[in-house]
Length: 249
Image (cartoon, rainbow, N blue to C red; front, side, top):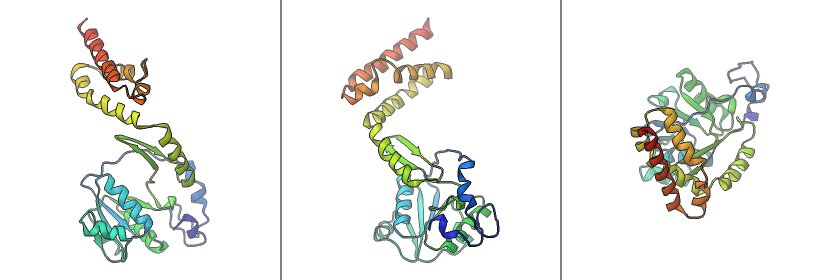
């Protein structure tokens, strides 16, 4: 349920103004979000709401290896399938309050009931938990940017809640700009990180080594775009030889 649905009702965001006047929505851009990447492996993530949006959020959490529990009286057929195969746990009921948050790392509310969403937000905030009420930035202490994923690369695009539609357009354009060659170079550079850490003694040495490869001539991205991977490997090997020789000098 979008933020506009709360207008004229009791204020529930951090401003607590009595009656919602939407000023919190207008003020969202005034305070920047702290951008971070979360490791969800083995962490319990709760999604409240089993519709299309709930499915989208569940799939995103599963893609990052989250331990997902769905709380919803009814669920999208694909969510039912995920529960049947054991990919998620499904509590077939309405949100029951604070007890549902025990042991939970993150909760996402994706229902069409504003009172339920408010309850989830309040319960989570009281426990200093990560909470996101979908499409209601004032009822979030974290927001979910649009993500472009290519191999190990993840590019986050956020408008701080101002315009999800614009973020989606930017996601399409960014995905066209940064192709598979970027992901392949990331993998190749990761393969040599162990050597760099074990051989190059300082942070600046390692920084110079990797920046010399990424920003060098010929451009490794262009070479990979042309399918000339062997030449990129040769560039990396040559950089290793130069770095080792400089240390020995």
